[in-house]
Image (cartoon, rainbow, N blue to C red; front, side):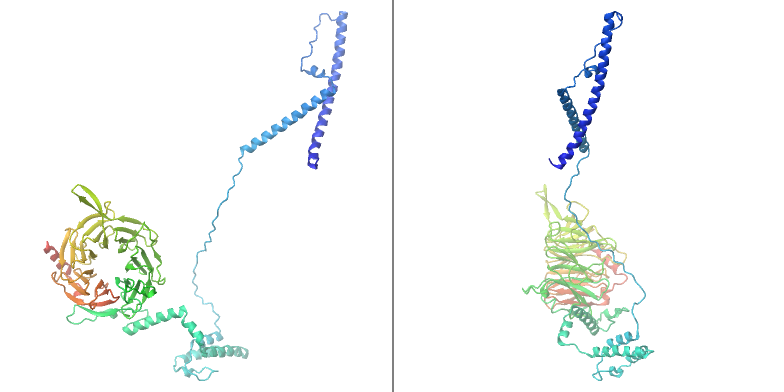
Length: 633
């Protein structure tokens, strides 16, 4: 038997002995009482026989199971065995009752359920706190001043190697600085003088040492040197082209003023062409910077001659300076072919564009040449080329609206291009056999919103129709269709509605592949004028941003036509071949209306000057134009 079993048996034996002793004492007391009862009974029987207690009541016999019955139980070995078994059964019953009570208490409190939990640890860096202190924490000593001065000065002579001769620099500018450094370097004690001369001589020797060829190649190939050289050469080339202040300071608007020739309403000034980035690429869009009128951008399709693979042959956005026509000032890349790009008028450092794959792309001019955000290729957005792209709203609340060729319009928030905020599928309900109405999808290439409008829009269809729609209108979002062109519409431009007391917000200008331009009026639900003075496809039109009745157009022959409707509505005011016979793709006025740029299919961007008599409106130009429109009826 193990020790644990022995320990368990000892308490049970003690308990049985105690029980047995108590039982023996009880039995002894009962025997004594029983003897007394026997004696009393025998005494009563004797007296009854003697006749002494004849009328006394007889004692009742003891009841079964009572004290007398218990006292009558004989104390034999068999009875003791039964009593021991009874005590053991009672003890087992007590233990069983305690176990049931313990199990009931455990059942009332449910056991905890354990499971495996997955934890994700986030390491959030603390917010960076920038503090400005007016103190300059440097140890300004005489030795430090002299060493810094000598390190900045690059000697051009090969005279003495051990001492610095101020006359070698050939300029009196360095003499006061050296004198100041020498006076500051003069120590009060000889120990300080000796400690000063040693680093000065070492600095002179280090400054006069030339770089090895390996060090020179490593310096030239570094990214910092290339960036510095690009920025410095950009400033120098701009300074050599035009005499103006290249450094930040006072603005000189005269540098951008066009030089007019007597009798020329529009003339070619210069051509912007980069042999590396724009050769063989068709221009797809043009846009001027609203903050700096000197800069404008042009987007390019990838090369069409099959030379693809190099980064210079891919689609890109080039930013040009009006004073630097030989090369692009900045270049922004894109993996897909760019269909349109423009400066965001509400965010001066943002360029927004669209691609032939259906993506919307955004660049930040402060963050390098790669896009900072772009939409994903998903069925929830565009899956066809996006040619319609514009910004609507105000400075505090604005959004980007895009339109693909399958008639899907998406509204985007510039903060996140992951998915569109709103998706509209444009279609037209057409009656068939005068009874049923079926849906017909709209294939479009152009999109235009009137000035200060976020709900109404106009779409130029492939079938030559001009569709008027509303973002929050009917289920089809198309409210009206205007018939006029016999071929696809290539450009749609709403009137800028600038100045004057007349309202021209309902005027829309369109160009088409049917060799015509048309002027539409939404109020009259038809076109007012058709301009037929063309001999090829018309690819783009543009309103002047300052003159209410002036617009320009470019056709497939590269001819630029300038119209002023307040003067004449039958013939263009000026006609000029600007591309040398190649097709012109895009045309855009500058913000002051004094210049315009034209892009062609070869990658050239031509800058043209417009005469002041045509570009700047007279006080009564709006009234004259409104009177001519009323005469049309």
